[in-house]
Image 1 (tube, rainbow, N blue to C red):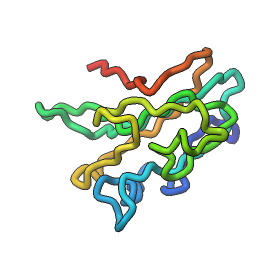
Image 2 (cartoon, rainbow, N blue to C red; image 1 turned 120 degrees about the vertical axis):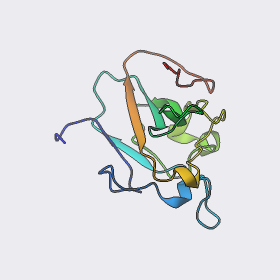
Image 3 (tube, one colour; image 1 turned 180 degrees about the vertical axis):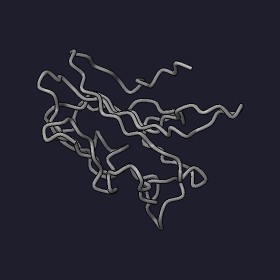
Length: 151
């Protein structure tokens, strides 16, 4: 990774692509903690960025016919460029968190809800892609934003 490369990492994983999400981020959870959104942070946002958008997908999901299709677990839009991280458990609490998170919206995922929804335990070994997009246009998305399927 280049020194000034735009990067997204999670303090909850090794960021090498081989570690599972913490169990408390799954639907089964760990004790009293379950379906908690993972902590994320990023570095070196491109200079012309107006806002950021995050999409988290299970890239090993299969549809009812057995065909591999990405399954969206989390959509976060309108992230101000001044924000450098999303703390653990932020999903579903953006409005009450306030402060630097004002204006952030959680879009609709493939579970048809506007919050982080972690994997079911039977999909716990699937690979997940966390993609952070640097948006260079002035755009404002609401909580109806979603990932349009191109399949």
